[in-house]
Length: 404
Image (cartoon, rainbow, N blue to C red):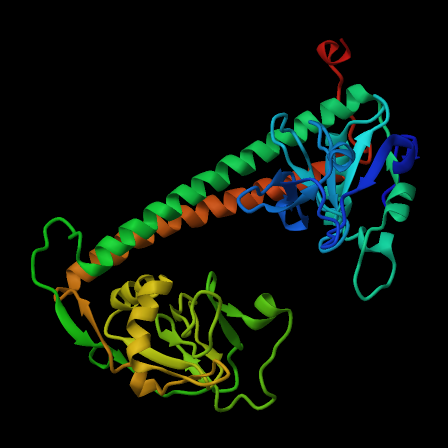
């Protein structure tokens, strides 16, 4: 670990560390009450949208209670993931998969330890605490022995206040991203189905079979192209960047060539897309994909963009594919490229309207992409600050107000 400029102490000397209640089907004494499980604890926050329940006796309610300022930390899964509990009225408890850290004195703040745990997690140092095991667990014994830096409480407060500013910037940006994505989804649903028309266009839309607007060019690798995969959220992406290594066969001569603007259909279930996904290539050069993928050239670049946005919706994708697809007993998909092109969609008859819709949706998507880059920049800045501030390389000036 990094050299520290402050004295260190063991977690066991700073906190009362208590594992939560073990799930026990036999012990059913007490009231049925909600509790926090591992999945409810995120970094710096709690997801209370789904709470499980179990019985807690009066004695257990005292033992496994939560107070504002308690730090809850994951024992398994992503070990060390933690958040500070700030609620005061919620009658919620916690299970054995979580450690509760409650300060023994005023020498340490749970907010400082939260940031320190996040810092060492980002450096990949948490797995070293648990050793080489098939299933990593941060046991109470190992947690008690973890040494952490202990600056003065005034400096702890100053550091956590500074880092929380970045957290607030990240949170506000992510909330804005979420709002913009909801707006884009609503806009897409209206514009891509003709429910809302672009001003200045009134021509009737027409039902087209996809083979009328998409052509399978059947070109294959020249041996010089990079191997790409298709992702729900990233579209066409280099296999090494997406999966960490190339999964392609040694001989890629029969891999399908994807030119800029081509539309690619994957024929395998992916998350919400039970019948595969459809994406337009936004790569500025030709790449290759598995021969299992269907590759098609759209009638125009803008039509390809229109279809890319249309098939971003799991429900719209299913509505198109369900009538023409066959699924095997093992959830395998049986569909030919010609069958994929056989169903129909209502599309604009005016190429200019198609272009206008594509431009509107592209502009909205670009705004979201820029916000995502901004959020990632904030996260990088925060990691850099934690690296300096939580090791004492950079010191924070403590104001007179903090000392009072």
